[in-house]
Amino acid sequence: MHMMITALTTVALALLLVFLSVATIRLRIKYEASFGDAGQQGLACAIRAHGNLTEYAPIGIILIGLLETYDANHLALGIVASAFVACRTLNAIGLFNPPGPPTATRSIGIVGTLLILLGLAVWLLILVHSPMPG
Image 1 (cartoon, rainbow, N blue to C red):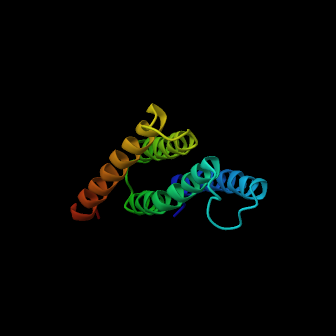
Image 2 (cartoon, rainbow, N blue to C red):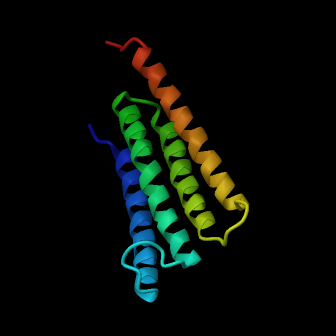
């Protein structure tokens, strides 16, 4: 069984994580902060953007992978997986903004992420409780 959707989703999120890691490292070097944010808002935002991705990406990848093993509709799963990556990217972009109320980018990113995770979980639950053909 090839898990192409899971693999491509994982690749996209890994690339985003590398980008966010490099951005955080560059700011740590700039502000000479090996730990914490040195009171620098930009570094704090970078740390949260990186951390936030590491909090949500794993469960998304797991749900997508499990759905793929349960032979979920590949077109629908591919669209939802792409939307998940897009929402995680929007949220990361939104986290790089100065303090204040969440931007539309961040709001779309987090609301989209939560709705997608909920949808994936319900979809998986339905497939798990459906009789297997054969």
